[in-house]
Amino acid sequence: MKKIEAVIRPEKLNQVKDALAEKGFPGLTAYEVKGRGRQKGIALSYRTSEYRVDMLPKTKIELVVKQEDVEKVIETIIEVGKTGSIGDGKIFVLPVDNVIRVRTGERGKEAI
Image 1 (tube, rainbow, N blue to C red):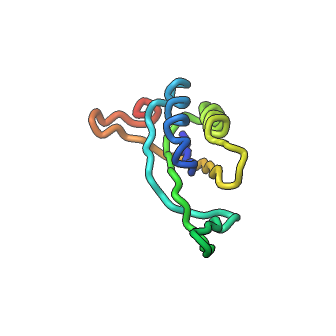
Image 2: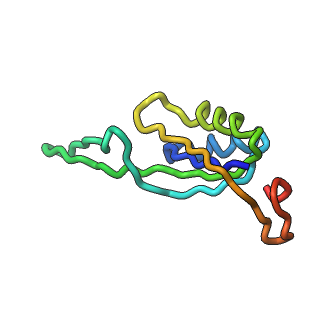
């Protein structure tokens, strides 16, 4: 099992969520986060002055999937989440040792 963490643009959340659900991955957790990447924020202007916003709003989604589904999920997030511009986000894949469903006590793949 793998945990997929993706940091995406907030305006892409509903599209990514719907696309993942259509492909059989309805369960995920989403957070509103702030962050910055290589671009170190953006320069904005207000009236006659310019200022820098270095922590931009993003959305982080997390889901745990079977090893064989990792590439399908990654491809879906990339396909739907990208705009082609700087700041589209990142995807991280981490190992998961175990999953336990609280309600039933099921463990492993059955708990996903």
